Amino acid sequence: MMLLWQLFISFLKIGFVSFGGGYAVIPLIQHDSEQYGWMAAEPFRQTVSLAGMAPGSIATNSATLIGYQVAGIPGAAMATLGIVLPSLVLVITLAGLFYRLHGSQVVKSSFYGLRPIVTGLIAYAAIHFGLGSGWSALSELTTWLTLLIGAAVFVAIVRYKAHPLLVILGSAVMGIVLF
Image (cartoon, rainbow, N blue to C red; front, side):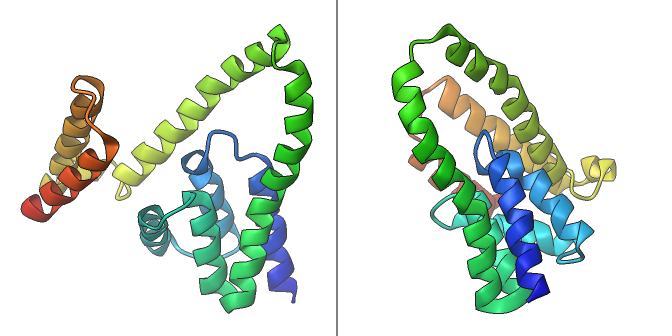
């Protein structure tokens, strides 16, 4: 029972600070997973990769998978409830306030102020995942091929305005061919 409560509280805290979407909170989920001994670094990376392939939020999917691996179906339910509940409460509460204040300069400025934080957290997660083996990973061919696919994706989306679904499928094909 204590483990279920720990899962719920941990993911509840993460849910309250999940500005910027699921990728921005991956470092927080990893910290708690390691701190509580739920999952080591490599199984965590595999879990997040699997969560990213499933439909829905990567944070919610990660919470569900971690909860399941730690405490079965009750763990999955508690972790999922924990990470989703803050968003549900905040969205309902803020929707009413935002409707009244959406034209306010303070509200607009606050959202602009959150952008660098979210960008930094996403960049950290990408670098941490990309160099999961540390800086020594830069000497591996697979790292450079992964960076090449990432650069191709960036160019396809920014320069050629490619549809994200086509980019995902193209990346999958490149992954199959190169790896």
